Amino acid sequence: MSSLTSNMSKTGVALAIFALVCTALLAVTNEVTKDRIAEEERLFTLSTLSEMVATDSYDNDLVADSFFLIAPAYLGNDGPKTVYRARKNNEPVAAVISTTAPDGYSGNIDMLVAININGELMGVRVVKHKETPGLGDGINIQRNDWITDFDGRSLNNPDTKGWAVKKDNGIFDQLTGATITPRAVVKAVYLCLQYFDKQQSLIFSTASGKTIDASD
Picture (cartoon, rainbow, N blue to C red):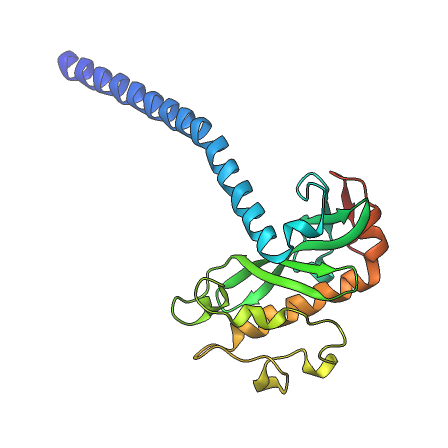
């Protein structure tokens, strides 16, 4: 009996040591990869920003000249959204606003929406989503050029009724076999334009790195 107890005790110690080693390895792995993942995300963001805002149109650092905005009524959820500012000779050129369409077919659709100082869209890009492959994922520029139909649009182009998919009597195409996904994106982009129109002064005057809660 004592031998069995001793063996069980040794097994327990071995398992405990194994668990500690695994935990330590996971911690080390996370620490090693954390900076690499952060750098990859930064480079992806920079690449996406440059797709929408021509690099020769501004002379500041868009990432450094950014702040965080909480405005769920316009930007999709309660989390802070990053707002990047483009300036030339210290004059505002454009803002790129992170926003979320919360009502995609499979959940949140995270986007970047670039708007110039005149309130015109310079581009829209989806950066994260879980939409159905072969259907809703047509919102990705890599899969389909559907998203480019926002280029040059504004609150007045089209009018309010036009800011909808064709199935809802708007001007924007549906994706083949998918209506919920483009409907959610169109709505989110329109709300983002509305916020820019209402709060352009705040967007370009807020200190970099600051978090503004505009929930009300």
